[in-house]
Image (cartoon, rainbow, N blue to C red; front, side, top):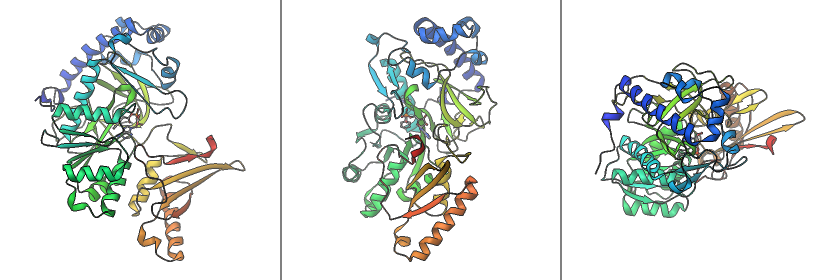
Length: 432
Ligand code: DLL
């Protein structure tokens, strides 16, 4: 069995890594130029040819690709290989407009699964583990990505998919699952269900690999405490393969980007200017090795920071901070930028579960902003006066964090719908 901790790559000195990236970038730009007429035209419009790209330092000369381009080129317009050489399609949920389709050759699948295997190994996974995969299987990349990674590591891989919580817990108990893979919001739901059923002593999880949505450090601590595990973040997006673009190691201070496969940049989302390391901005990725869907300078809309500080795990791959959410998740309420993750931080710090919903509307030309929060059972059985005073306390804590006032409504435990995949936190009625 191959060892998917690949120190010869993952701990490569920076200069050597750059050399590898340079070689791969040149090859990839030529591949795209030769095989993706849509992007070639974009390059021509900018007056760039493959000869202008001699190293990663020239990356900024290439045009960006955006989600709008993916929709324009839907479904096959950005493919870099003939359909006959591709073996798989995945897709995003497409809540707005057309779905985004992503294509894979067998080679692409292999490399993607390697990336997921690295993430599992970094979370302590070995062939002794029972890997409980509760990400959705199907068009969503979460299930099949971690599943493939699990096989590569040699874990006993359990393709649970999401949903049917009773069955999840039954299998966890009967089969002795040791590593749980799902969205952080589903992990919370599972933790809640384990406690309700008094199953704590029967569940033997040691780690979780959670991603696909923004989650705060407070939520991490909450999940770790309730499940008695170490919770590792994992990041990725369908357009770049799926989970495993980056992953956390035991230091838990950001996710190492698999830089032998992806180059990351941070740009100013308004001007497109490349920002120096350590700046906050929009994350842009160039895939170096993908054949079927080789995206160059793809704007993710995720707001994030990169750091090359030395990591105690020995990996030299650059680390990305937890994304605050996508720029399109950001709400502008009465002119102020609000990220759902900021609200989550306040709630968890004040001892509330992260079960909440944000409702924004516009009445008489003014934005209304309401946060519904589930109370814990103790508060629920308390007096109305206590509940009102708890609401007031949350109003001021939210105002201190966000700079604007929200109306807070404490609701009964379990009254907000639980998610089995990515949680729906925001109902923005202004857009309906
Ligand atoms: O969510 C792939 C994935 C599956 C990642 C399982 C991790 C685990 P999409 O559905 O295309 O792909 O959504 C991608 O989700 O641009 C981010 O906005 C968000 N996202 C993914 N991982 C994280 C994370 C999968 N760890 C979009 N933290 C990305 C914050 C995340 N946001």
